[in-house]
Length: 227
Image (cartoon, rainbow, N blue to C red):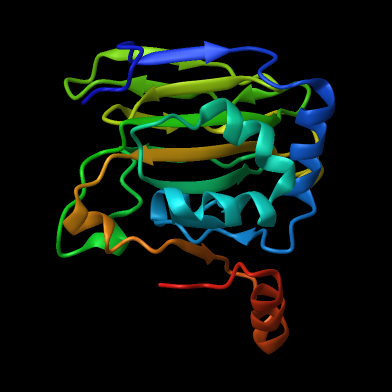
């Protein structure tokens, strides 16, 4: 099945209220899980963390990240049963190479999952004077279908089969977190039972090394790493 809008790319400005958007932005900036990316080499210059979860893990996700709840309510649709969520922080000079999202593959191998039905990208922080940092989307034949200049509090959703990349982010100022380009990305999947059983109900990945204290904190909050 294709996603319900039958459009490859859809954008929405002022997707959340100003207070909701600011709370989400601060939630990413202040997250104890935020660190060097756990994704593949196409994201080598980025920061973030990731959460793979099934629909029954959504309640735990809401408890773990209450500031994301308005975003979840905006993008979650019936019919999808597995998800991959990650904040994506790109510093000045960084970029993301061309790819098609399929981040649940690491959980389902040797079985190959389908591409996501849709991908939801919310721009939580876009620095003033941004040069580059555009989201470019194209089909399998290389035809450009969208060139999105990010704006704060903008939601972009696109067909999960689309090839996409982020052009180099340039502009004045230091390469610091407060002046970075921050988006919250969620991949939405429809998986058959043989694939779905391989996806954890809730699994958080971070490069931050908190050791035993970190593991205990996750256990206490009920959001532990459960493969």
